[in-house]
Image 1: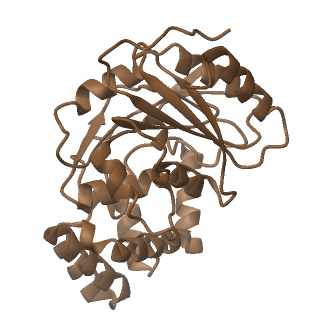
Image 2 (image 1 turned 60 degrees about the horizontal axis):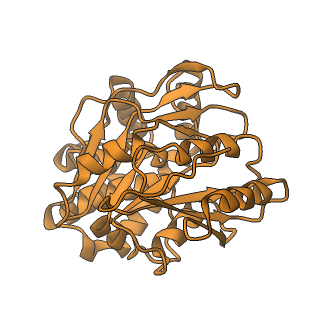
Image 3 (image 1 turned 180 degrees about the vertical axis):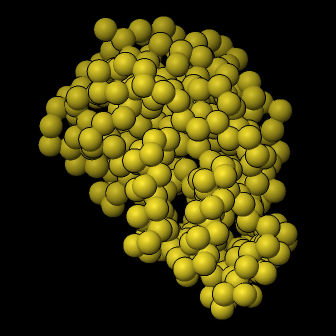
Length: 315
């Protein structure tokens, strides 16, 4: 049974934004890890996208254990995982100091929230997000590796061509929540973690990347996104590039950013325009504009992939 320890007075309130869909296999383990957090002042908002298995029964039992003031069950929009998460971000009835995205099949380290809150505490006036590496586990919970450790500084120029960290590691402050709430409902959002990185870095906000993992990220056949650490993962990314998937992602991101230009600082607006022009330009000018925009990826393999994508018109 999950712990039912009460919140400590004076701790910042953290809203945990969990989305579910047919997650019965691993959900209980995730909920237990939430209940075991060293930061006690959390409230869970679980948005289910129409599960037909025992997911709702598991959530209802957790609500009985923790109380209805601490666990809230909502109906999702049934428009995919990213829109489900964004529906929670936009929900005016969810009030907190910080907001944590939560997947249904991971396991949080006990200090996950506490560590993230401490890192974000100095950054209240501007949009800020904490994110981290992950430890990778298989279906049985056995550790099989770690996500890539990135060394280059987070920035909007990186965000334009790469998502930095999984949303399952992210904690947002109130200013970041308000920023994401401005995304039009009709905007094509590739993934909520990527748009977080784009908008927060592009608005002059703070992105805190922690090289120490905070989550066990479960790798299994039903994963919507993989960890991108193996040779197979890299080959999948190359295939996406040649098929035009990467280009479509960039197109969707640029379209969404253009709808949010008022939220970007002047330098980021110029960078978006240069990147958009580069995507449409002929080959010699394309590389000139990309260099002027200053976009970069975090790894050598990623940089080679970026150059190749630009060379064959798949940017």
